[in-house]
Image (cartoon, rainbow, N blue to C red; front, side):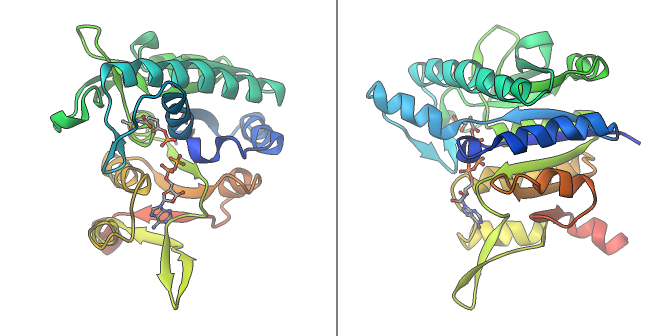
Length: 267
Ligand SMILES: Nc1ncnc2c1ncn2[C@@H]1O[C@H](COP(=O)(O)OP(=O)(O)O)[C@@H](O)[C@H]1O
Ligand SMILES: CC(=O)N[C@@H](CCC(=O)OP(=O)(O)O)C(=O)O
């Protein structure tokens, strides 16, 4: 039984996470059943810094078009401000957190994404989780920024949901996306309703029908990809409910659970 719980903290919810949330990460580790590993984003903070520097922000299907100057800002914000803030928040709540990016310890490598108009947006080519397992075994909580490089040393900006999926797959763990919404929402009788669970095929349809849009597109796709790479379970939950993580580890139904239709048929 593999015990890694990868928790992806979205930039959308970062400012709203309370000390109770960070304490819950530390409590999960102390309880002993799960080894927490944090992957974080920081999209809104990158956009804010780009605005300050009068550099335009362009997104294509939920991914940031990344020129060299955008890459410099993304790395500064993600591996600098965001990563250290998250590490200090966990440490202040009693946990022993340590910050890393894909570059550190050769954690994950990247190549440019096929869509050339995205610039220095990377897709992951390999993950070597050794540094994570070593840190977790020593009682640390790794906090990972989604910046990496290729074999020539070129750095890339990678969507944090994709990084979380690849890390969870390499650890054969569970994956929990913490966002600013209670899960995947769809309109039902004029009201936005949370889907308790949703299959890969339904996600494809919802994206086609534009009922899943913006940042939820890479998240939903990363969730499906991770299941195809043997991640045990994936949920999207609301970080504004600090008890959501503890509830999840106790088996309480929270957020939206993603599943593969094919596996459900054979279950
Ligand atoms: N069907 C949907 N259900 C829920 N959120 C959606 C949906 N379609 C688009 N979104 C948007 O996706 C956002 C979450 O993605 P994103 O902002 O990238 O979050 P994060 O920073 O947590 O990765 C939500 O705040 C919401 O605006
Ligand atoms: C290529 C790409 O889009 N990279 C993201 C990396 C940060 C991220 O994913 O942040 P969230 O989790 O807050 O969305 C970006 O530049 O915004």
